[in-house]
Image (cartoon, rainbow, N blue to C red; front, side, top):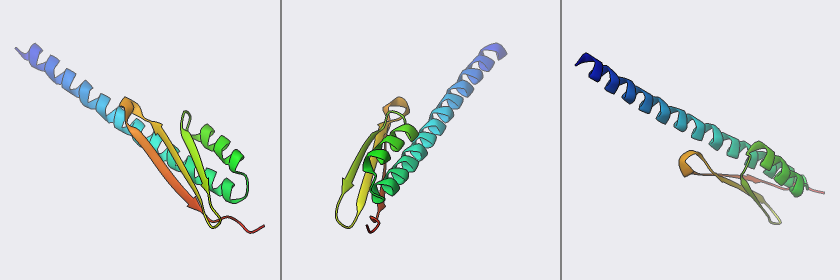
Length: 99
C-alpha cells in the first residue's frame, strides 16, 4: 500500500515540476520578447529599422517583429508562440532622434 502511495506522490511531484519548468520558460521567453522590442525601438529611433528587426530576431528567436514608424514615435511589436502554444507579445515605444 505504501508503494502505491509513493508512486502517486512521485507522479504528482513530476507533474508539478514540469508545470513549473514550463512556466519559467514562458517567463524567460516573455522577457526576451520585451528586450527584443526595446532594442528594436531604440535602433529604429536612431534611423536603423532594418537593423532593429534583425537584432530583435536574434534576441527572441522565432519571433515576428513589426516596426511602425510615424513622424513623432516608433512602435515595435514582438510576438511569438511560447511553450504549449502560449502567445507572447511585447511592445516598445521610442521617440525618433532629430537628424
